[in-house]
Each structure stands twice: as C-alpha cells, then as structure tokens.
Image (cartoon, rainbow, N blue to C red; front, side, top):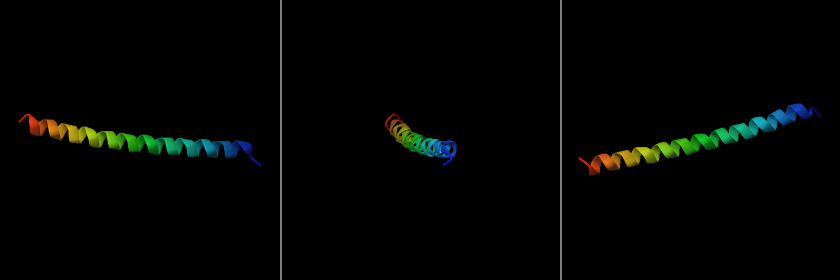
Length: 45
C-alpha cells in the first residue's frame, strides 16, 4: 500500500475542504459587507 500517495490524497482532501470553507466564509462576509454598505448609504442620504 503506497502510504505516501494516500497521505498526499488525504492532505489534498483536507486542503480542498479548507479552501471551500474559506471561500464560503469570504462570500458570506462579502454579502454582509455589501448589505451593510447599502444600509449605510440609504440611511445617510
């Protein structure tokens, strides 16, 4: 059993999930920031 290959595969899977989580978090943060910006613009016209 190629332990190095399986280890790299596991690392790749972990990296992929972390990347997806970061992407989701960033997009959610961007959405909140946009909403916040719009609210401020509407309030202080």
